[in-house]
Amino acid sequence: MGDEGPFVEEIQQDLIRTGYSLPLFGADGIYGEETENAIMRFQRRYDLKVDGLVGPVTLDKLNEVLNEGGTLDSFPLPSGIFQQGDEGEEVKQIQRALQQVNFNPQGIDGIYGPNTEDAVRRFQSMYAALVNDGIYGPETRRFLRMELDDRN
Image (cartoon, rainbow, N blue to C red; front, side):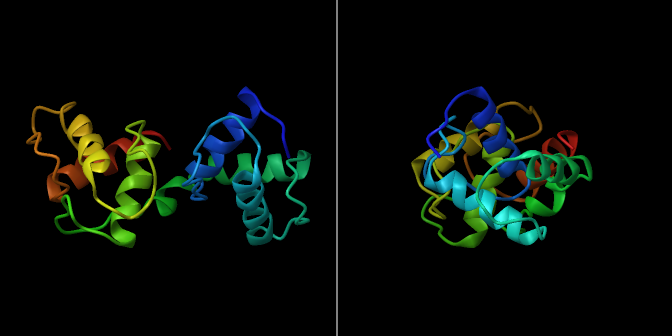
């Protein structure tokens, strides 16, 4: 607790990749309460000593989960069409996936607001095949899944 720097940021990015969101601060390089809670949830899930510390055992397990391709199941993508004004767990899934592929929606709050729409637009602008409208639909889903799979 209280550590900061590139190693902490890397741990945070690994946590996000394995499905442990850090919605308040993301991968900010500061080991605070949010990061500690995510580490403890990770440790509990994998039957490790739950102490909130990133020691060799926790680090090895985190790397093992990443190497097993733990990201696919960690980033489920909803079907359907989502746009500004929508809310819920599906929107959080979209936000997590966007953050994972480096299109930060400025928070994982489950609200499809201007920041999420902007992140979707920026993602869509990478592909000529996508309409750059900020609306998440089947085609945007397909390309987002491709990007997530490439990171495995």
